[in-house]
Length: 148
Image (tube, rainbow, N blue to C red):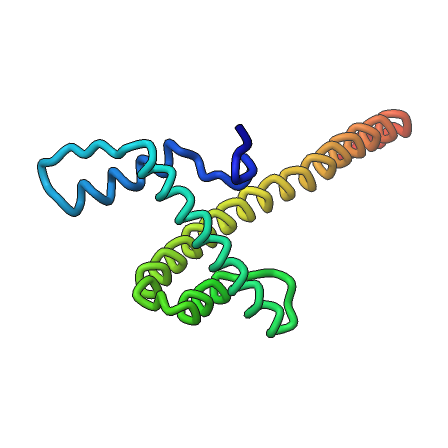
């Protein structure tokens, strides 16, 4: 039996199940839901098609701007263009949070890199200084000057 969709395009079933059950649990309290296999497949296919449609629209917006890389803003514009503007506020909030976290990570990473670079630069200098002092001491001893 042939699959209609390549495996690389399939969304992970466990994640789809988790998202569906999580959303359903928010809609109705104190109820445990079971989701039929066919329903999970329908959710998965619907999400895949939506992602394709949204990404194609975002790509068109990107090309109109004469760019090759789709940005988060392109996706926001695409959502508006395909008339899913009710997703704009929650997605915008998520993007802002993501960018904050990413900026903090980059800042922490760059500080760590700066410290490592500084240490690497200091190590050879201290080794050279120690080496030159000992050579100076040897020269002083040979010349009988004592260095003091």
